[in-house]
Each structure stands twice: as C-alpha cells, then as structure tokens.
Amino acid sequence: MRRGDAEFLRRCRAVHILNQAYVQVVEGAGGKVTKGWVEKTAKAESNFSVAQLRMVEADLAEYTKDFTPEYIAAIEAVAQKQNCSIRAIIDRREQAIKRYLKRGSLKTEDEARIAMGVLADLEYDISGEDRATLESVMAKFEQTIVGKANG
Image (cartoon, rainbow, N blue to C red):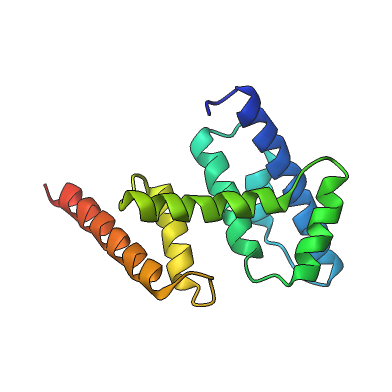
C-alpha cells in the first residue's frame, strides 16, 4: 500500500467514516470523545501518510477492544450505511499479531505499539504460549531500540 493508491484512499475514507460512527455511538451513549482524537482523524482523506493511517486504524481497534458487542454492532450499523466495517480494522489487528508471532520479530514502532496494546490487555484472547512469545518479541525490539540509541 502506498499513499495515494486506491487501497490507501479506500482505507482513509473508511477510517474517516468509522471515526464518525465511533463518535456518534459514544456520544449518543453519553460518553465523551476527546477533541484531539476528532481533530487527528478529521484529515483522514487528504493528509494522512501511510504510517498515520495505520496508527489511526490501530487506535480505533484499541479504543473499541473493550466495547460490548452491542457497541460494536452500533458502530458497524452506522458505518455499513457507507460501505465500511470496524470489523475489518479489528481483523487486521488480529492478523498482524499472528504475523508478528510467526515472524518472531517486530519491524517498526507501529508494530510494537500494537503488540504492547495486546500485552497490556489481559483479557485479549491469546494463549499463554503466544503471550510469552509476544513478550519475547517485544523485549527483542526494545533491546534493538536501546542499542540504536546508545550507539
């Protein structure tokens, strides 16, 4: 995926629509969405880099991970009116974790951020063995970062 190609533009549009659905559902239930989040995602269709797009997708997956199935269904219902799906973003996150486990390494800070989110979530559906592997992968990545900073 590259900035400006059809897949990038489709995913930017989806993030924008899903953000609107997220805000509508959360605020409709009496919750608050921070102004920074709204501003950060408001530029989705025109100014995102690929890294920013992936970060916002990861944020959406992270923010909705503790939502009840009813909340997810409400977001999905709003988003599907414009042919988008929050499930697709959540599924991409789960596929990413499987890739990190299979590869045995993290390549970028974005990947590390996703892995940290999973490790921090004790209720995330991951086996004890996979959790230990992911912790090891995360530790290797952190050592690499420290090594680069020191030398």
